[in-house]
Length: 393
Image (cartoon, rainbow, N blue to C red; front, side):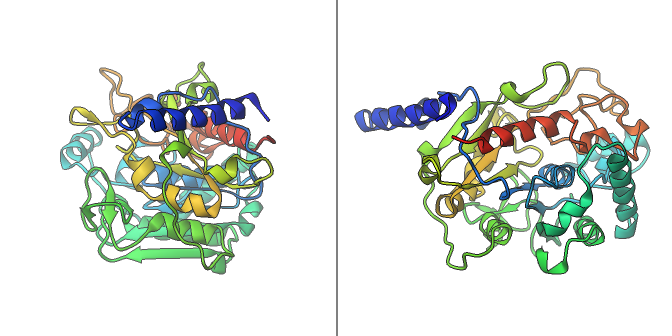
């Protein structure tokens, strides 16, 4: 048993004792013990999958492509294809998405002399093919033939004006072009949905597009995508969320301090009790939040907190599916005086990097964008987190 896992189990026991003795103690106090590193749980190496919403969807897709030899599938909710932005902040904001806030959209549009425009899916497919070819050539990503065994779940909303459904269509065409069989791709298109993550726990109307971007669309997206990515159990039902199974860990242990990553100091991991046992061989799923959904993003004076982590519904399905869920976190960064034409470190919404804000002069090499390679700061960090969880107990 690794020392980190021992610490993990000890912290769970202490948490239970404290709750039993002091029933009124706040949950946040119990959760204050932060794991120095993620525990070695001996998870299945051939059953690692990823998913995400919006910028998290782009991150999930590019992570899947970059590490295709190590993954089994991905779910992309309101996201476009690999390498969509070509390392350009203007392309990312006006052609691969459109700012939800009109005031912000007008500000950026004025800076670049334009506005939002959605291309034909074939145009995006050309972007993706060039990015893949460029990154494979420099050995920046795994060969795409690994994707042929993957399973893919896609979601789009007809009322989504942030990420147009045509972008999700472009993602679907990309997967088909690289050889993912049609039988392994599921497209969920919702006529009523705006820009958000569909969850039964949400209270926001399906068609709305604003914080917290968690919507009630009569769809349990977390459950549906997990059942698609992990087939074979038709009777799989959601379980009960265990507050004690959710633990914070230090992301700084995985962050390269020599480069800028925008990663928050802590992330979260949900480990069902069944997955704590040696030899459990549970599976691993990584869930990437969207813009404005990271724990440190401020909505007014309040931090967004754990709404994405707790209210998307992943944890309920993880309990009965024997799945560990990793919730890495990005924090906002907005250097004073930063010109929007120079996007380095400019990440005021706390988005995952799908246009190159973690590198200087990202747009100088659109055929081999670094943000979508294994060498990119966020990509390397999340892969290191996964590797720790996969280590034998």
